[in-house]
Amino acid sequence: MERGGCVYIMTNNRCTVLYTGVTSDLQSRMYEHQHKIHPNGFTNKYKVNRLVYYRFFPNIEETISEEKRLKGGSRHQKIRLIEELNPNWDDLYEKEVKLW
Image 1 (cartoon, rainbow, N blue to C red):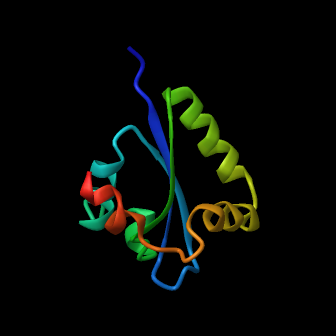
Image 2: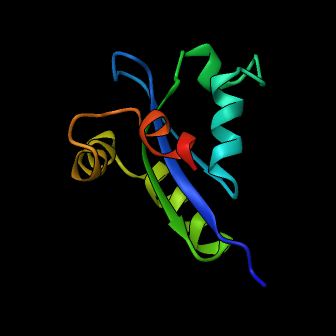
């Protein structure tokens, strides 16, 4: 059985920094970001701690392909994508993922 994955975008409290990532376990990955498990990582360095977008895919190949597409796109495209799903830039980890 193939395992799916998730592409996600996080930001800092002022919404000035965007981070795009991929994972097969979003809840565990958010825990790592929230608890600064990787102290020298990008999200810790730039205080990126709010999940503002995520999307699941049925297999990891699709997930990685979408992550590459998003990373290759402009900041404007990422903002538009976030605002289609989450116009107020709410922390979706607090509202949704944490409750799973």
